[in-house]
Image 1 (cartoon, rainbow, N blue to C red):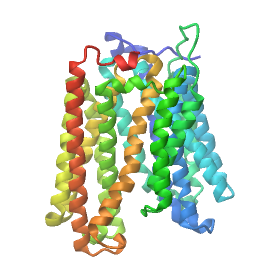
Image 2: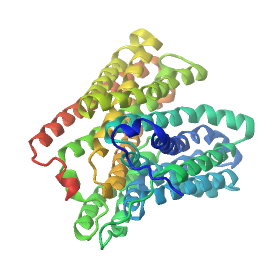
Image 3: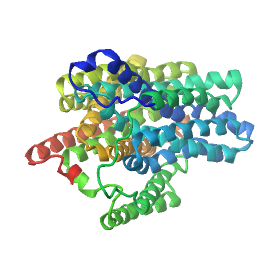
Image 4: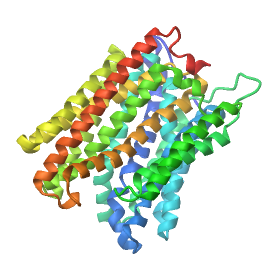
Length: 487
């Protein structure tokens, strides 16, 4: 039997059985977020082993990672909306079950292509978990504690991302590649049990004619997102004719999606949603900040190797600092959001990310490792502040029947930023080095590329700050800032 842990109000939240139940509900959501992030990062370390085991080229093996990411990117908005219609608790439990089952299938796959199919199925489960965990926050905690809950989810995401590579390496060394995926099975079962026991029951529909799922809009949007993601990822950094064709298809697909959404009775995304200037600003800044954060992960190893001459072990330690800082900063950031409001913390986080990007552009060349680590700490702490505040700002006033889809759109903006950062900013670094192969670039070329790349990154964050100010100003002039969400 499911307890009613709908968002409590007043002093009762601070003690007794209800507080206990809410904490366990947040624990289940935190594990769901951890699993989806762990699924993203743990497989990368196993690619060389998989290439050897299956005697496959890298171009084939990389689909073990790409299938997971593409499934999340293309499906996250659709499953968020589906949760609004059929019930978020029901769908989230289904997503956890699918993720757990697919993890087992991945670990038992006898061939590479069956492994890739199982990873795509695992990505479907992860998309459901990512889309619905944030949507559930409003139903599990009071509005005054939303920032703290969002900060906790951000912390669990950072821990999952940071834990993936070292855990994956240890599992391969001790148990073989199959353990990369089988480790998720007991964690998934635990998450399912907690969620089934403690998440609030789905609200019963109050309308006589419930909304229907927009199948056509979902298919068109998934095609658009798949085309964009493939255009940004295939070719291993070389932008050829196929990439151009895919990118053009994505651009044309956006127009087709907008046309479909104006024709159907129950659109996947109400286009009026984006008339809310504050929401649109939050989504754009989320994408820009995610682009810069991915830049640190893509560019960092090359710079540390070529410019500073560090070996792999030291690089691993240096690269672990960012996720650790993000994990430590998440919960305090959420508490600051609850105390001072999302708007102030958003601007504080953006300012910190911009300052860190400027530092990465200037300090490492003169101060070495300390000159790299200090800006990284500032960037990642700022990112944690921004994420907690931005997620809270987006989800705070969304009507209950739209929380799933808006959470999906918010996660989508982040994923698109990550994909863009890996491709576009990686290309900027390569071009700025003025060498044919960045992996063999001389130290001077890598240092020059670092300066240029993070100067561009700082420019993107300054643009994000301008957009954030503009969004708040336009929202302030509007008589009803959330009109697009309600209509």
